[in-house]
Length: 476
Image (cartoon, rainbow, N blue to C red; front, side):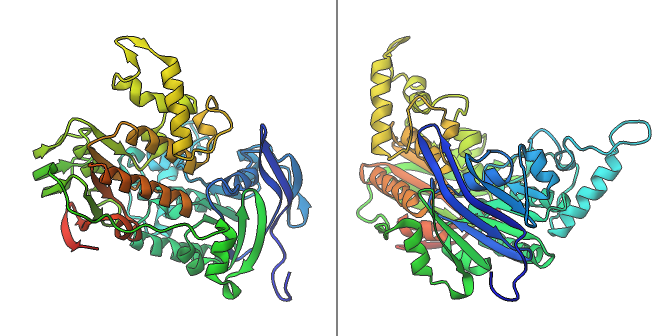
């Protein structure tokens, strides 16, 4: 500790954790100070989320100890962590979609009226105050299912603020946010730290970390690689500590496009609340082309992707091939069957599309060979293929989704924020697969809030604003 710095609020000392034969944390130390933003950085699988789940009471460490204000802290459950003033916003959001914002805020802790029923007036008032602190113009009685993913992210943060936590952990909070929302989040994190909280930001985007963090701790393959003051840190050094090497960078897809694979005329789509989400869009995408669509989240991207994939009703005209693949942005809710194993999730594509045997007969040897091949080809880090898919890191879960979708060799690929929450290497691998799909003759529609991703892949780019084209870039 440097002279004049506040004492540690939280100390995680020599933390180790293994899941079966896989050791994911080895003697990791993390020290958090009040009034600061501390970034926890590393690739997918580095152990960031596991370390924070130990602090959140979700997992228990195999070795090491946790101190709060210098005293040992026992965290056998998430409730114990919350009681200790530790609130977590996980990468995979935990709000229940069939409840209102206020009901989610007070779930399990509902205030009661004198008659013994839930005090909904108080719930609404306190929820409105928490939302107002983040300048969120949302109705406390609004169902969570009607919110965009970005809105859900901010509601999760408001939930942590309402709990009056002294430690607020955010797991990849910018993964679902556009540039304007990221800037707003950075402002919010600074304000929270200024109030005396210790804010932990799990991240791998260097630019965002250097814009907000006071300190950063870097993990790689479960090991503590170092701690740096932001003011003294060098971005290239931090990147090297995270990945160990510079990953290869690809170029946008170029070359002569082939025949039209997707033709859209006067397309209009309604959102979940009946609002006009997409308005009179027309465009074509050819074989061998990556058509990028950018914009701030909530401007019709999700509705457009679902309409193109045949999952949402629309007006207008869409001409598309028979074999279409959709990479959804929310892998756990829309891309995976979390109750199934890794290999069973990979089998879903062949089974559903009649490619797993003859008629009603399934060839399990063929299915297993195919899933093993996908695990190798897509670099999915597994203990056993029979392990639950929920046991994988977020990045490896996304690889399972990509492997299943692209394994069918679709003629049209719709990718909605396909590298959400992935580290540098994993994101570049997904980019390589999308390039390969285009090179093999597929038309690729890449819908992303990440402008760097769009520039790295797209033959041309359009931007959505309120469901309409706002601006375009060709030959990026």
